[in-house]
Image (cartoon, rainbow, N blue to C red; front, top):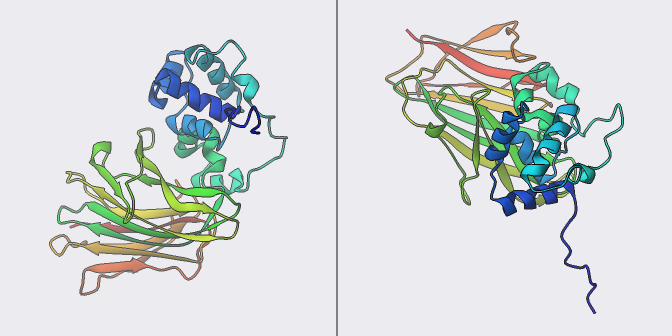
Length: 302
């Protein structure tokens, strides 16, 4: 005989919040605008993390947002907030320390502003091991395509997505296309606060701890009048290997090329090392060691 409550809905903050959004036909963007009219700034990325259960409201501003959302979602005062789990104890850190992330992004970075409560949890369940990316600079001197291959290892079981954030040379979100070699394209979110796009790339299945997965995707930009001068990648944990391969159109070759490393966004690189193009109009960066920080190639045009 089946249990009477075997099909009872899950009663967690994330599940109830998600169901209430669906029942009222509300998008995360509409919730964000509603909060903004009450003087509360919470990003779509943060709301997405709340509804998925990847993080929960804890800061004072976030708890105020929950209070304001309750009447919008048809809840009596205190009902939604009562579903929040206990606040993490003082000194607690998620598997990926916020300090390690801020060591690369800097304190109070725009990315932290965009992600809000989700910032310390950004890919906290995964460790990137190897990254190989190829950027194509077209005849108009613009990075029109970036192909990325990432090898990740799960640091806890149940991880199903790799979250990626890419900064754009073009401010027009409509020019961005992110595609996968398999399956449908993921939903791409434009973060106007930092001129970036974000997406959750599926891993194919939920990983168990220490299991690895290979992620491939291509980011393309439509023609624009903008000109590109660099490409860089940020790591918050050490990598086994990083390869950045840049290919220039034969009708648009740079006059000078350098590669660089800096420990934190916003800091000037202590040194730049000159690069040269080969006969195929390509150059690359392949560090012998990959500690956390920012790696890139920059170039000049005549």
